[in-house]
Image: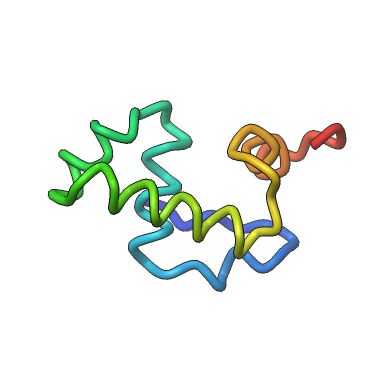
Length: 73
């Protein structure tokens, strides 16, 4: 999977957080991500929470907008 590059501190994400983010960006559910990465859904939720915190995002929708370059995020 490709790492995501933006103009903000996405590089602070761990390799595992990058994996989770990439799968979630491809519209996989928490359960699907957990199955693909062989972990629990709760672990995926923890990674998701840390991703939001590290990127100063209010929620996952605003993060997706920022990653796709939308100004209304």
